Image (cartoon, rainbow, N blue to C red; front, side):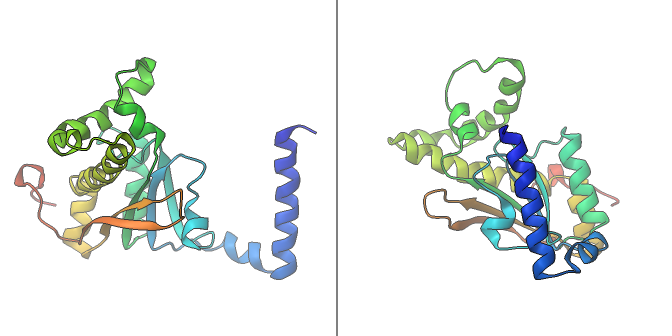
Length: 211
């Protein structure tokens, strides 16, 4: 049996178990999606948003990419954000990184990861540059990388606040609140590291008029 075939068998067993426990489960799920949360997380397979938060399908709208980045040129992310904020009316947007993130660690090196990954990791290098003094004062490499994980989450939350999508929702609906969290692979605990309440003022250079 090929490895992918095992996934299909596991899926059938999971679906059967769900129906045994609740015969109307899939019928009900097919007709409702009212999540309160948009989760912007890392693509790392060890950080499944539903499992680590104890939530069910339909409760969290999810976008994932390497190192949970928020780029103002990423149409994929912005379309997810737009849909979540303006159509699903989410109340909270969570950027969740994780300690020991390979993308964060890679960005602290001078390794050439070739064109596409170099482009992506540049955004993390920019975060390092902004916080260079603090990070360079940390001698232990793992501790320094984990601090960069926290600072990167903070910067990505601020990048969300710089979008007209978030600013318009703040002005018109007083939502969503923005949260920066970091998940610990070693203990399974989520640590809140940054927060912006709806309506928080940012650098005026990034605030839009006439929303």
